[in-house]
Image 1 (cartoon, rainbow, N blue to C red):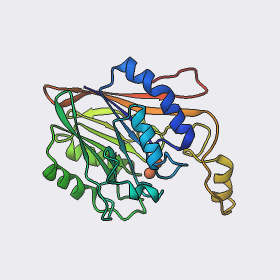
Image 2: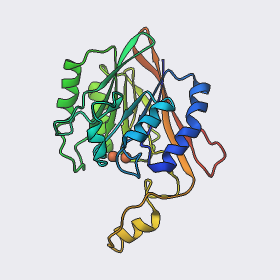
Image 3: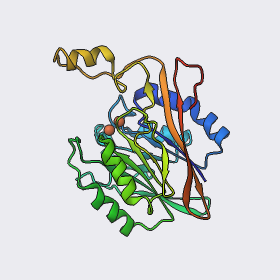
Image 4: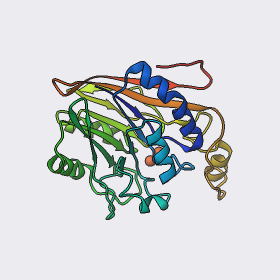
Length: 262
Ligand SMILES: [Fe+2]
Ligand SMILES: [Fe+2]
């Protein structure tokens, strides 16, 4: 089984690069399951029903979120209708946020979205309590975790702690792809998958606005940048007999370097 997981999709530029490369990569790599992090897909913060529906139309099987899950309030009205939208399990509110269990090549795969707690402002409960609860409550052959967290060590520790029980731990949230993809006891791991969004930006935001906000302390709107985009994802292969990951490969396409797929 081959899984394609796409990192945080930021704004229209991020959506457009996904729409362009997704059919090509799915065909070339013979992908069985596509998962994408959509927490920044609507103007850089949150997701809307329309965007979720479009992701489903283009062949994304499951959309995970993150700390910006509820930034566009309208999605709250549609939580129960967006069956393949996975909210962070440990976000402390009363809305639906169970993981999604899909059947792929005869195996059930439980797709989870969990927030880290280091340097994160959201009201989230402990990620270990969250994962333990999921493993007890939701039975599946495979568990895939989008660990949406800031701190590298926090993500690495989580992966080592659960490596024998999970098939993949993929980090999101920092928007910068790390080069540490590896297998840990048959669990595919990467600290951060990276972003799908404007390449010349500050993690997807306009550079000049970020200078004004951070250096000159001016009030800005943190506008999403414009320009050519970078594509970031990972491809994970799972042995269906052993139910363990056998490879993880980064996919990165930069706009200024001709088709540079790592
Ligand atoms: Fe985030
Ligand atoms: Fe993000």
